[in-house]
Length: 147
Image 1 (tube, rainbow, N blue to C red):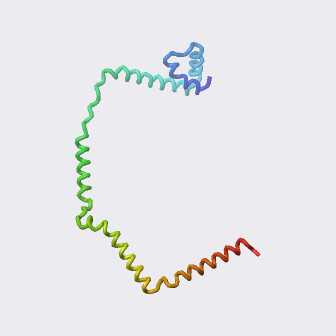
Image 2: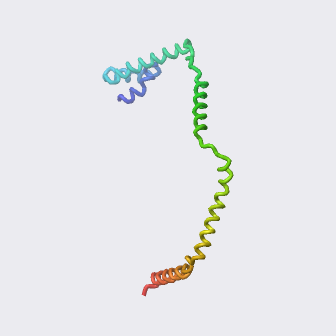
């Protein structure tokens, strides 16, 4: 019998739940192996502790923990009120003009476009676009139809 098997069956050996043949094999291995012998002593100590705890569980009184709910909730409320004080207050003027700012931006864009058209900035734009299209189509045609 090897050490791994003995350690696996050790709780059943301590409780006396094994057949006589298996128990004899384990006892012979424990007598020959100092590692398994110390493992048996440790397992017996842990089993004794566990059984003492189970017997004493009926006589133990439940622990009385203090109720921290009130203190915690008061601290949370203090933090929340501080956060509310630090938050920026929305003014009536800001609320009134906020939706109108998008219309103001559109108006400025329309005005600038009108000025640029009056000064002839977009005059040669169509010619430039046609020139670029012609060069692109020539290069694509050359690419697919190599001579």
